Structures are given as structure tokens and as C-alpha cells.
Length: 338
Ligand code: AHR
Image (cartoon, rainbow, N blue to C red; front, side, top):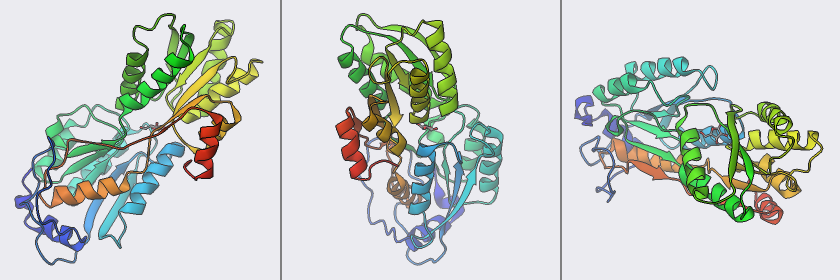
């Protein structure tokens, strides 16, 4: 993407943000440079950042979007324009916000998509306008030359760590159920792929079923209540693709007169404070963190993109795992829950 069409506005604003890029960083792969390779001196305009966001959705989302707001501050040289979706599943409001940012000629767009499909036209418009787009958290079904990079923990690896823990915990396998996030999202498909890969070939594993609970605690509880009844409580393991659904599953297990953590083990993804507390209490058995704190990574990618540096096509955010009440309590004592 050649930023020259937009003159040095983008480069001047990079200088204003204190990102005097003096050379190209060595990055493997990644999108084409978006600028002339170095920040122009001077300039006092802030970098305008259009953030097409999901908005209120749960603990992880709140932590992640706050991390972005905390990183793209005026003091850091940015003018962050936050555009949450009308609801976590409302793609139209996101497409409208994206289009407005292109028409307003912001310097860069950050996108966390409520759906993976349907972004091609808008991304092409941004490319034609020489506005770099950076994906946060979720991928989209579009050519990778239409965006600079995707910044997220590795969903497949995070889910693989859940599967590896499950395979070790249940060496002879188990009847299990999967609570999925909102259908069609890249992270849902990636988490299924990672978990399945970890238990592939392991004997005794019987997938009773999978169903979305839309990332929500009440839906997770309702789904598992039905599943337990339909299977005479013969479920040993539940993989919940986020903490809120897993906490709902634990509520359903208890309501069925079973003991979560003993009769039914539940593993989740995210690492919110509520999940770590549930793990410390024994209601959950394993929590794989999906680290939401990548504001600095996003600022770095924005500055590099606007300064014409190549950026890796994916930026992986490191995440931890918690496999015991003691590990959870230690994390809570260190303030790692969010
Ligand atoms: O895309 C990340 C997922 O979205 C998180 O795991 C979940 O909590 C959120 O709703």
C-alpha cells in the first residue's frame, strides 16, 4: 500500500507521535510498506485512528478495548475515534463506521470484526484510499493484502493447550461437550481446530455435541442443563470457548446435583478474574489465558505501517495457562485477572 497518494500527512503524524523511524525493521513476511520508509520531520497533527470495535460483550472484551484506549492516547500523539458495534453481533453498524472512517480519511483503522465474512468491499475501499487497516483479535475472510496485520494470541495454540491438558487429565478419554462462541467467527473455528488437533488419535474421546452459547453465562448454563438431562449426566468434560460460558456450565453442573471439578471438569479460555476465582474455588479445572493486553503492540504496528516499514502479517500475543487452584490463586494475588 503506497501512502504517497495521501502526501506526507500520514508520515508527519507519525513524527508527531514520536515515532521517528530511522530504518526498516527486519520483519518476516507481512504486508507491503505503506509509506516511504521514514517519518518526515515536524508535523503536529495527531494520528487519527478509527477503531471499529465490538463494544460491551464480556470481561475479555472490556479489558481488550480498554487496553487499546489506554495505548492510543492524545499524549501519545493519537486521536482515537472509538466506534463500538450497536450490539456484539451487529456487523452493519461496523460496516457503516468503517465506511465513515474511510470517507473521513482517518490515518489508520483498527478493526475487531463481529463477523469474519463480508469485509472485502470495505477493506478494498480503505486500500484504495491508502488507509492501512490493522485487525485486532479476530481474523476476517479477506485477502491478507487488504490489511497490514492481525494482532491476537494464537487461538489454535491456546485451544491446543486446553486439549493437551484434557488428554492428560483423561488418559482413557471422556464424554465431552463443547460450548462455542458466536458462530462463524474466526476465533471459534480456530479454537475448535486447535482443540481437535490435541485430542486427535486419543482413544476413548466421545464428542457428545457442540453448541453456541454466544459467549454468555446464562446461555452456557441453559445449554449444559439440557445436555446433562439428555445424557443422564454422563458428561465428564466440557470445553467452553470462553470464561463466561464455562462459569455458566459450572452452574448447570451444580444445579444437576453434580460437583464441578470432580464429576464434570470444565476448561475455559480467556483468563478473566471471575474464571481465575472459579478455578481457585474448584468450579473450573483449567483456564487458558487469551491475553487481551496488546495495546502497545497495536501502537507499534500503527507507527511502523504509517512510517512505511514492513509489518509481520500476524503478530502473536503471548498467553499463559492456569491448571490448578494454586496457580489461579497465585495469578489473582499478582493481579493477573482482568
Ligand atoms: O474474540 C475473542 C473472544 O470474544 C473472547 O474469547 C470472548 O470472551 C469474547 O467474547
